[in-house]
Structures are given as C-alpha cells and as structure tokens.
Figure 1 (cartoon, one colour):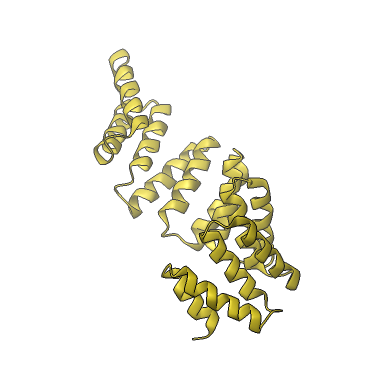
Figure 2: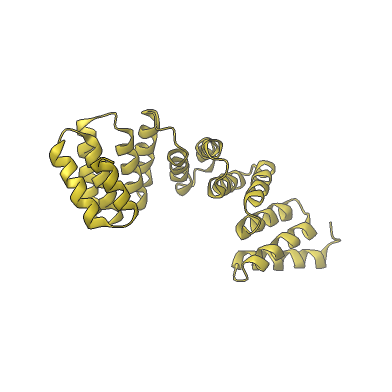
Length: 223
C-alpha cells in the first residue's frame, strides 16, 4: 500500500494527524502530482479548515486543469458554505471532465434544488438514481423535485420505489399522503399520514396532513 492509500485509510479511520503527516510527505516527495493536494484538501475540509482546503484544491487544478476530483472537492466545499452557484459550476466541471459517479450528479442536482430550480435538478438526480439504484436518498430527493415540479404521477412512483428500499421511510409516506390528498383520495392520504406518524410520532407535517384529511372526510363523502 503506497503512502496515499495509507493516508486515505487513516483519514477514513478519523486519524487526522497521522493522515496529514503522510499526505504532507506525499506532497513533498511529488510536488507536481495533484493527487496529494486533492487528498490533503479533502482532509482539511473534514477538519473544517475551508480556506486552506480551497487553496490545496485550487493548487491541484493549477497542476492539472483536468483534475476532476479536485473540482468535485471544491463543489463539496462550496456546497457546505451554501454557495450553491459556485458549487454547481464545480460539480458540472467535474462531470464534464469524466467523473461519472452517482454522488457527483446527485450533488449537482441538489445545487439546483437548493436554488429552488426543481425542474433543472431532475436530469441530474435521475442520473444519480440510474448510477446507484439502491440509494434511497437519491430516489427520495428525485421524488421531491418531481413533486415540487408538479410531476405528481412520476413523484408517486418514485416515493413508492423509496418504500421498496426502505419501508420505514416516514417522509416517503408523508409525501405520498400529500399527493393522494391532491388527487382527493382522502382515505388513502389519511393512511399514508398515519403510517408516517406511526414510524415518526413527532412528524409535524404528517400530523398536519392527518388533520386536514380528517377535516375533508368530515366535510365530504370519503373518496
């Protein structure tokens, strides 16, 4: 195992000082190799030293303007700082340079979501679900964007897929309840809200949804 791999292992084990020492040695031994700077930048991000992390990642790009993982690291850094416009540009650049990973597409989609550009987020979130169909968070966020873009039939199918992966996902039940309520399927909506509350008793939105559903059932014939 080379020093980079050893340091990454230490980083994953949260042994930050030992990892930093090895990454520093890697940079000293290969000062023109961007990988050491990228890995050190990712370590600094975990330590919340964002300014230093940005410098290391930008140094990697100076050494190799096609360093996709450096742009990906910058995307995560800007996303954590809620600078979604800059994060979006960085993730897009990483993908353009060939970083065909589910999380890169997911994070790019989330940049659009956080700017309330629901429909623009859809192709990227969809691609994330295609690259990793077993990640419930990718599917759920894709479902939310569909719902917020008022593409309700597809949103419903997506939330149902989330429940196939995790039948205790209270937020998926809640959103299915909202869609059912929109389609005036009040009893079905009530069942979804009650299931969400069964799984998460403090789910405020589901409790509100249940109250609305009960009010509808009192006023109109149950559908």
